[in-house]
Image (tube, rainbow, N blue to C red; front, side):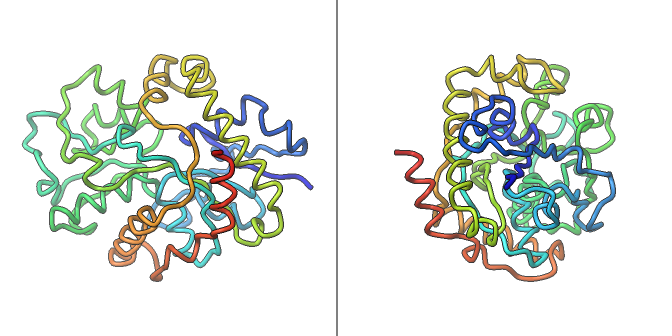
Length: 301
């Protein structure tokens, strides 16, 4: 049976895995699904601006396994999908932050009221903005979110929005052209981890395939950590130098889902519900399976 794995550049581990041929050694029948090819531009939820690639294709047969940031599994559970977390990375605070142009009068999250905030809506960036707003005593309704993706850096420099959730390698372009002010330290808001998840039914029916994917990802991460420049040359859209900077400043390796992470995700999920960005309250702990945690822990030994 074919195992369908979704991948895109922002999940660095899966991108490298796709291009190194590691998984095929243990799972010869792998179908790689480029998530950018699944994005039609039609938004499935106008409140989130959430592209279909971030959740629904896991349940309509598009793919079986995916890696993202913190937000997509929350929105998937919020839509009633029965997902299970597979693994998490270590914290990767250095990957991105909430910035503005220095000298424009915006100096803290409290200044966000009424401002246009550029972000990849429905990604981890939505979670960061919600947490920053909460810290300032503001809500989602106090800002004007601007949904931006590949051209975000240029649009920020062109003044289309006041504040931007920038991430590497795209922040490198902006840092080279403008003096930035960080509105809040990312590590004071959340751990900003990569994570991987799947559907409960698929995980229960394919434990061997799941184990093979986890072990292959661990191998891909070890290779990337040891060969960042070579890995950087696999990525599109930015220079190899920019991608190398992004790769060497983040942690590598998959870890079991921790109680700390579950609590952090639950706090974010509660904010999504309170803000009207998901329709139902969810319990993040329902998506944690001890047997899958065991598989991830064994892959680290």
